[in-house]
Every structure is written in structure tokens, then in C-alpha cells.
Length: 140
Image 1 (cartoon, rainbow, N blue to C red):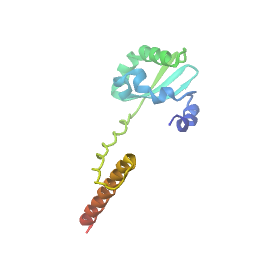
Image 2 (cartoon, helix red, strand yellow):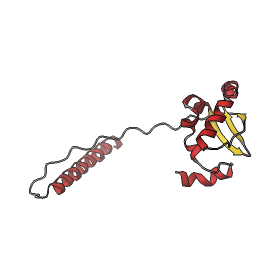
Image 3 (cartoon, one colour):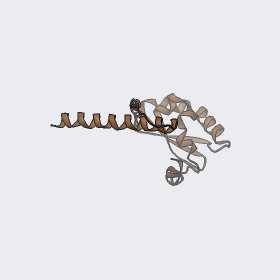
Image 4 (cartoon, helix red, strand yellow):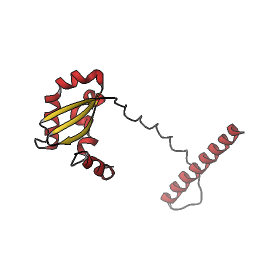
């Protein structure tokens, strides 16, 4: 993910993507929920902030500056500029994966690892067949 983000990050003044990727862990959950780093240019960190939270974030500015500098390991931020705007919520978490299908009974295989693998494969095939049959019933 860092490689794909790097060119865009550099374009906005972030020499490294670490700050963007770890924003919540750097500034804390509450501040991260209402802010997004936009760019870091010549010591000025530009943040988008939800309008209702602008005053609070302004008061937290020195703390945010210190946390970012500590995270980056140098005095990279000397000033913070706020830009009020909409803050989209983070993407929803993925739904939990389905439990692994129940393995089928396999006999006549002397190698135990192969037997377990074939049993799991058979269970996966059966589960897929059941899902396909169910989707055919609902589509007709």
C-alpha cells in the first residue's frame, strides 16, 4: 500500500507515507476522526477539519504538532493550518469471512497430510455447490 501511495504523498509534500497511513495512531482516535492531513510543506502541516471541530482542533494544535514531530523523529512541523471541510468516515470494515466449510470424509489415502487436504477440498467443493444451487433457486 505504501508504494502505491508514495507518488501522491510526495506530490502533497509528504516525503514518506508513514504519517498518512498511521494518522490515527499518531494523533489519537478522536482527533483523527475529525481531521485529515492534506500536505506538509516547509514546516506547515495543512489539515482538513470538520467545521464543527475546528476550534477544538485549533486548541489541540501544539499537541498535534508535537505528536507528529515525535512520530517523524524530527522537527518537521512548525505550524498547522486548518482548512474546514467535509471529513468522510473511514471505509467500513469488511464483513467477517464465512467459516471454513466442514471437511468431507476421505478414505484410502495413506498420507495424512494429503488426506486432510483432500477432505478440506471436498468440503469446499460441496459448500460451493450448495451456494450455487441456492443462488439458482433465488434467481428463478
